[in-house]
Length: 330
Image (tube, rainbow, N blue to C red; front, side, top):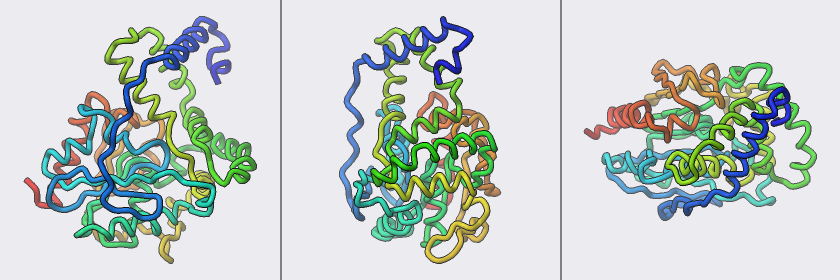
């Protein structure tokens, strides 16, 4: 990818490689320490962030660790909402083993999300980020919930565009035999898929990092985010295969994804719904969003909308207000 993107500019190639080397040798802080678990279903647990009132259950993506929602004290949507008085919980998917190979995305809904949500004292407000939003929407169709918020979450996978979907299909064709043998889809496969969505940005960010002082706050933030983006547990084989099938055949967007014995129909949801969509998201394009009537448009990147310098104004505060309108917290 580097050779392709910098074929006509060896200076850019050297700069990007210098940025990569600087990232590799950077001094790391300890990763965030997540709160203790209060409920468990299989390998998944709920992390308890405290607060009071009606439960608000955050469902992160299956891809990358869940701590992007609690990246640092000053970059923690979860701790900020708990301090605002909400009862905040985080679903931590845990680490799958080869024995979990048959657990597809549908099984994550029915066997993990639903039992954990049912362990709570009242139907929760579900808040899903990225693929976690897709999963949260499916869960809302098969169990009582107080509300559903989707953040940068794909539903109409045709909205990724033919070019991106073709690249993702080619990637799956290349790695499927290996993943079949492993019973898992390694994080490296998924990350290379993300790179393919926006290769110019991938190279550009390492070029920019090469110019940052190693001890600067900006450099430390870059390293923390890149470590998160490059980390995470593998997916069970069936979950990875179903995700690639979503890209190829748009099962959710065409209304043919079956969960709990019936097709998921977002138009039939009885709970309040909201969709936080970024018009500048290069990972999950706004054309792939669910299409709820309450659509809040942001202007930040896929990750920046959650942890960036404008995240509190663009996402945290509006989400707080929306949850409060449902739970009655003021």
